[in-house]
Image (cartoon, rainbow, N blue to C red; front, side, top):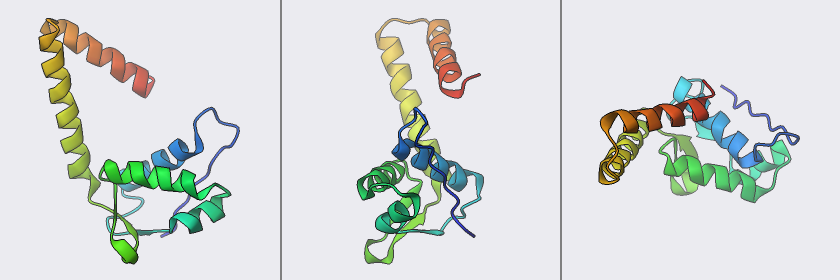
Length: 124
């Protein structure tokens, strides 16, 4: 099992976001199994020709999302992300629903706002 990451320096997407998205997708798809040990921040930064802070920012975001977990000196590993992602999505949805209701939006208007946001995020 090898971590395959490519960073397009000509892309309008920030390198840390490219890195975050690729690791996240690989973990969620199972290409990187739960428990897979990721390279160190410095090691991956050197391999990709990025600043260590760029890799650290991506790892920090992935850890906040529950995709990876750091085990002190033992390293950084792919976590059982499915449950964490579902919990975070459910929390975000509940927050949105409460806010939409507070603003006086109808059920249909709130659903339309969600549909618009999903189309924008997923490009569909």
